[in-house]
Image (tube, rainbow, N blue to C red; front, side, top):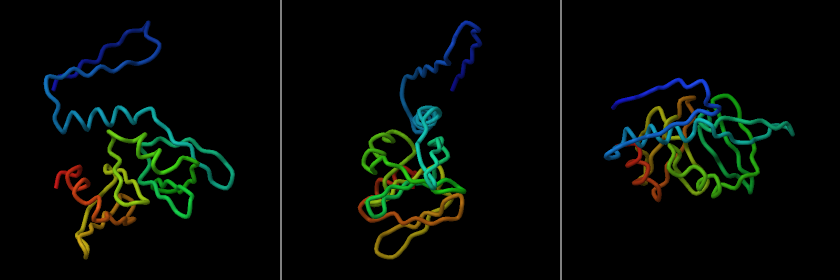
Length: 145
């Protein structure tokens, strides 16, 4: 892969162009990473609003009509619906793993087979999330297993 980085003092906003003859998994990963670089999620803790880089988010979870997202250290509530998050994060390292959870696959440290054709994914902070049967094949494919 050839990378060209050109400094042009008269440019106000950085621009990234990807040229390719074919697309492979490595290039897909690079494009997904670039697309997340400038995206942020709005969340709140005790009425205070925060702007969190999407790449810092481990997973999203819908609980009792509320949606939360979790970083390595904090949990935030968001007004965005889980299906809207799934749409927004299509073509990124995020994947739905159950009806109520969307996980950042880049934050998965390990996976372990569970009973009843489920997987348990351990995230980089040690937290565990369950991949349900319905999403198992998609998640395995996205993780390359």
